[in-house]
Image 1 (tube, rainbow, N blue to C red):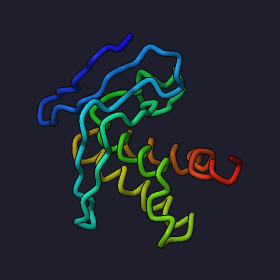
Image 2: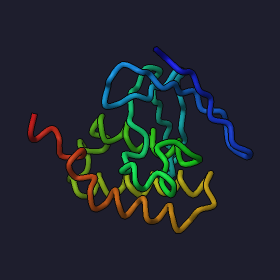
Image 3: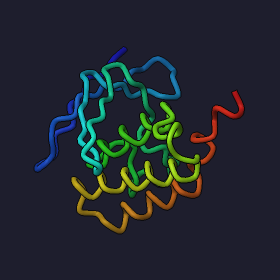
Amino acid sequence: MVAKLSVNISNFPIIPIAYVLDGSDKPWVVTEDIGYVLSTGDSYLVKKGFRFDGTSSPRFLWSTFPPIDDRILGVILHDHMYMNDYLLDVLKPREAKKWIDNEMLLWFNKYSDKKRQNRAMKLGVKLFGWKIFNRRKNE
């Protein structure tokens, strides 16, 4: 079962995503290509079909850090970059992770005025994101 959803918040572009009820640990799927212009000026594309899990915040934090909200563009970009080892061919792992995490915060701040929550989410990613970022070492 697929529940189509287009996130549309004032001053926020429509984000083509769907929630798929198939038991996956990544229930959200991008339903159309999403193009980004990064802080470096480079273009970045997340293709239709990319699966992600939202913010990965524990359920008890959802009232403050819901899986999907106005930070969704940063979440999708961040998850895609982690899963595709972005910058690992040119930077050391610690530097690449830091750059991706900082880019995520820039996208959070672009559409969300909750700056303190944005920084708290970045801190959570900094502290707990290594498990996902380093996943290839364990595969």
